[in-house]
Image (cartoon, rainbow, N blue to C red):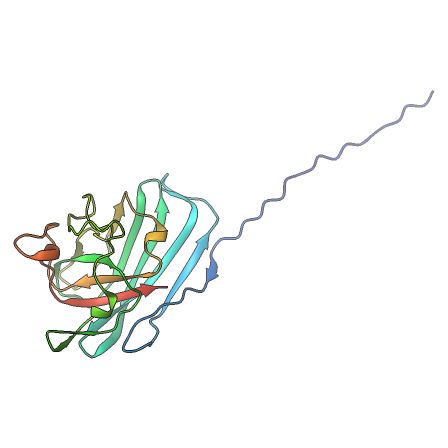
Length: 208
């Protein structure tokens, strides 16, 4: 009687790991239909520090703006979905030191618009993103505009490099809108001045 030796071959799972896949994002804005640069990256690789999840990552290029239109690039904002909410990492320069109002606006357009007979910077972006029509400016933790983001803090050298988290937002809240930086700060209220008192729009970036 013959003994038959059978060799077993264990099957190894095939892992597909494709990180940093670049995906085009249309970005509108400028005077007329001039495009503003931007890009998105899909990260299917997993996270670090127990914060990131497998999901999308979005990078938005920001530009100075004025009543004539779109000016020079000032850096980027990186957005990523995490277990702590929407992670916002700023890498910006050329801004006035201090605190600046920082919001998601309705339309993906950084161009100027006319108000009270004068052209003003960034008005083509519309108002703060407010899909539930609350009509209230209450800050990132309030029950008002979903577009209310944490105050952007700029150091003495004019750089903003902090990382922020907004629990109630996700990547999809950025798509189809403008990211706007204002000249003044933000008290997360409509008093004594509306919309936190940020005033003029000084920098913008959009994602279609």
